[in-house]
Length: 207
Image (tube, rainbow, N blue to C red; front, side, top):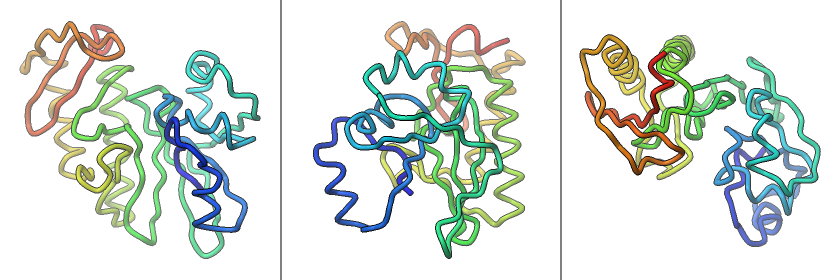
């Protein structure tokens, strides 16, 4: 299995072939082109959370392959190793984390940011996602979630996910105020930074 394909990666097929001679299944943590862009040239199938497929025509306009849906709780059996699909909406409606219970870690893409979360949904959704993720981490002894950017340098821990809940609740209650961020990516014109967590968001995130 390949988790995310990056973007503008030359000879991705050769890179993958240099790692394994087995057939590779491409799964996406979410639809954004920096995670799926290279699928256009190299993968005839893309497995993704259906909540993100509405954006495929805009994010992946040239993708001609078949889009297949992941299911929350689905087990991807790699033969001796298994990944559990966990839907973790927040960064996007279809953000997904892949958990390797035996290894004690997971791969979360941008679901919890990579030191900086871009929240395109809302804080209530993020809180629910964080609570769900903490339960899974505690139940299965998951120590870290590796993000899609700065891999290994900003691994998410249970404490950091708990801090996201605290910050989200404080923003919704008005205890913590966001600052204007007019040049924010994806139209996210507010930013809040507290408890070691930074979140970019828009007005709709406050619902």
